[in-house]
Amino acid sequence: MILHIYQILGILIGIIAILLSLWRFKDGKMSLGMLLAWILIWAAIIVISVYPESTSLLATITGIGRGLDFILILGLIGSYYLIFKMYNTIENMEHEITLLVRELALQRDETKSKIDKK
Image 1 (cartoon, one colour):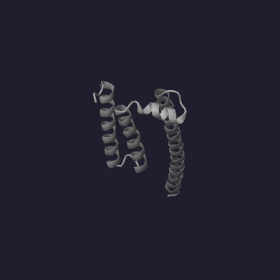
Image 2 (cartoon, rainbow, N blue to C red; image 1 turned 60 degrees about the vertical axis):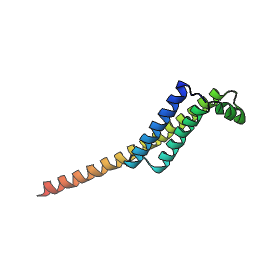
Image 3 (spheres, helix red, strand yellow; image 1 turned 30 degrees about the vertical axis):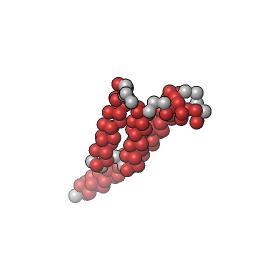
Image 4 (spheres, rainbow, N blue to C red; image 1 turned 135 degrees about the vertical axis):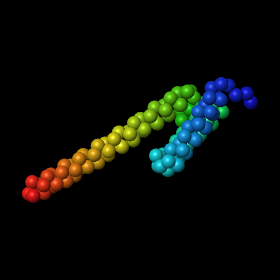
């Protein structure tokens, strides 16, 4: 089996991305769930790079016209999921920051009151 340049690039990028994901997990910058999700995504990219005809099979199974259409739809769905996840994370961070700022303001007010009483 002769590999084309795009297949070699897909394999290399997939392997590098898996290694980077493992490194981020080891450093505590990624949860186990996200590590498994990214490994699954990059492994799928490697498999699709090696066997590009598999996308046509998956497209036929799901009722989508062509393999490329299947990949694009899957990519869009995945992108929207990641955007949604990032939005939720940002919302949670904003809420936590608001709570921390309020707590700090109350502590400063208490400290200022104690100093003024002396």
